[in-house]
Amino acid sequence: MPIGNLDVPVIGKNVVIAVLVQSHILFAAFIIGAVLIAATSEYLGMVTKQNNYERFARNLARFVVLLFASGAALAITFVLALVTLFPVFFSILQNVFFWVFLVEAFMFLGQIIIVYAWYNVWDKLAYRKSLHVVFGFIAGFFGLMAMTMIDSVASFMLTPAEVTSQSDLVALSFLNQTMVPLNMHRFIGNFSYAGFLIAGWAGWRYLRTTQEDDREYYDWMGHFGLLWGFGFLIMQPVIGYGYLKGIRESSPDSFNTIMLGDKSWVFNLLVLWIAVLSIASTAYFVHKLRFAVKPMETLRKLAVGALGFTALFTVLNVIPADADLIPQIGLVFGQGEGTQIPLGSMYPWKYIGLIGLMLVGFFVVALYLRASATGFHWGRASRWSQVALMSCAFFVILTMVTMGYTRETARRVDNNPGYLIHWCVTLDQQIVGEKCPTKPLSEAASR
Amino acid sequence: MTEFALLLQAGSTGDPTAIGVFRFFAAFVLIVTIYSSFLGFTYWISKDE
Image (cartoon, rainbow over all chains, first blue to last red; front, side):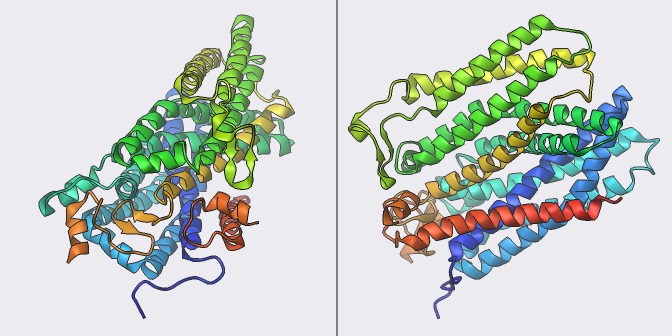
């Protein structure tokens, strides 16, 4: 039996890997983001003496400790599945990234130890709060380092490094062309994703709770979560642009597949989810300004204007370039690619949309933070504002899954052949040499 | 059905048939199921503390 020729009945082996990794990342990204948010919240509680921060940090830390097992179990199952179903590919990765995987394993270990210690000594270090906060940040740091290690592998698979000698292989593969942008994108994304989920959970609890003090707490928690969620989301267009620019320069055919080609509908879906997130968040902010302790009518009117602009700019991002919407299912109008849709082209409209969304986002967050400085009357938020928070949590999950699919499907290009490592290793684990920029790898094909 | 399969495996030289569509949605359902059940379990074991 040829090595690595195992398949999985019914769903196939590609789906097994996709399911395990996507599920894992939904936990892993949340854990990294949540640990850092909780540590920051604990610090804010220490500085401001406001009880909400401490209560929130401790509850979130407990949730992370309990959730860790699920995330870790999925990671281990994924590695097991990869070794079993793609042994040749895994062996190639090990040859290039041995040190990276080793560091990753120890970062993971460090994260487990410190996260558990952090939660467990909460009371013991109650009078040494600064030290305890540092525990939280170190746990977050270990998580970020583990993420950095795996990002180098994931980015290498899409944009393998240009390496000509064996001695450069490890360093250049680690710092391949899209490693830094991907890492920045995920660093920011962790906060945003965790923030939206926290806000959604708070919205759900707010609607369910019957106690007044809990109602006030969950109202505050929704506000705090959304500040993280939306505040970090609006940094993403410029970082995402940098990442896509890296992909375009290093793997242009992958870029064309996901931005202009057969799979460009995934990006349309993505901006649709982001439109929902942005509009729901801004609408929540506008609503919340109604309950500012110090009435701020002018700020509120400005925020209403910002909501209008958010809607305008997000709609600009969603408009497809031409009437050839999804040709594969016959969703074509007019002359297809020949029929250009007004305001649909990337330049200048989508750039205007993305830059405008960022500017308006920063503006509305600044307004909202200004109002937060004097505080809000908690516990009075309307039902629909909490539904907006919950829909943010739902759509941020769709955003994560869509983005994961987009990056991985980019390597398939036209499926002739699809790649595991772009230009270097095909989906059926064959090393191909011709266009592979990583010469020590491609030379193995000719041997 | 074949046209819809092409949506998911555009230009595929593989086998763009109903199995492709099935696998896409099977993957999505599995991800959502695993994610929500693990989250639900974590909530369940932590709620009475």
